[in-house]
Image 1 (spheres, rainbow, N blue to C red):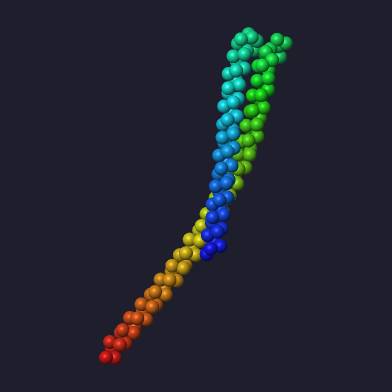
Image 2 (spheres, rainbow, N blue to C red):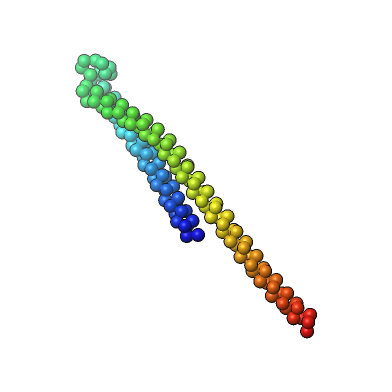
Length: 139
């Protein structure tokens, strides 16, 4: 049973690792979205200051243009991470299923052991009762 316990611990560790990875990716996506929203506000403020809202205009503010590029990069990165997040969630679900299978096997084996133990105990009690009955009948 020690090997089964070790396997269960390993599966739990794998589930925890996959869960941490999912949480890390979710955190990164949230952070990128927050940063992109901040850049959106800064871009709008810069456009208002300059009075130019068209990025193709020759006098469009350089800072706003750089912030637009940065925001677009952040959004692309967040989109890429969303694909990784789906993969990580799938891996987490798989690891969780594997853990549950091992735990169910372990539970089934423990039930078999308990049933065997109960049968042995009952056989011993039957033997004792039979001996007492014989001793009582023969006396």
